[in-house]
Length: 256
Image 1: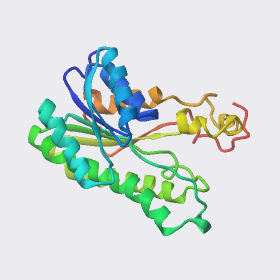
Image 2 (image 1 turned 45 degrees about the vertical axis):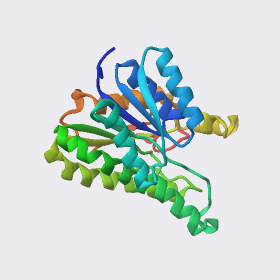
Image 3 (image 1 turned 180 degrees about the vertical axis):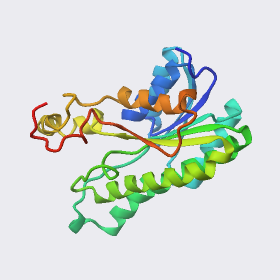
Image 4 (image 1 turned 90 degrees about the vertical axis):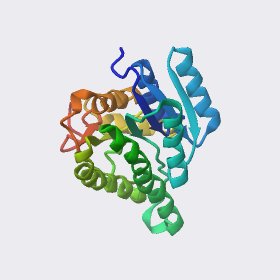
């Protein structure tokens, strides 16, 4: 229950969904959690829930696509706790737009948040992790892009495909500092946004998942905690798919 006792963990996109689930799991394992996001009200609610459960943390309102916000995020973590042991970069957006109708502004916004934001969050953490001589970085990517296609989301899939290439090169560069960087590629996860899509879409997705259920934020969170723990010390530059087997079938009409 205390695998991360006294560890300092930054979780971006922590105000809801997967990020909230990850933050709560880390807090339950003894970590001091820095909750980062744009929605201050929701961040406060998550932090209050963590504190009521006996956890510890604080919030930083910020935008991952702004370098100054990411630098301030790390500075506040160091000011409060003196170090940053783990970065879980979860923040991202996925607006729908068909390629033929997508504007340049729509494309650039998704790339700026999802891919450039990954670069900025990781870069901000490197100096303190380098000085410590250790660090674990876990990026929340997606099966969409690295593994599958998702019509209406070419900007999103491009950004997540970019994350795959980014972590591989970053792993090589950061290895000499004893910093591990890996990714999680979730499939369909039941969050507020996914639930809002509607029952018909959920049922269609269920047909494609051999395990027969939509994933939960905790399913992703447990994989994150593995990559953030000492059990993964010899793993870097890799991605773990957490999708209930969705990417495995040759056809989604197969009987499971």
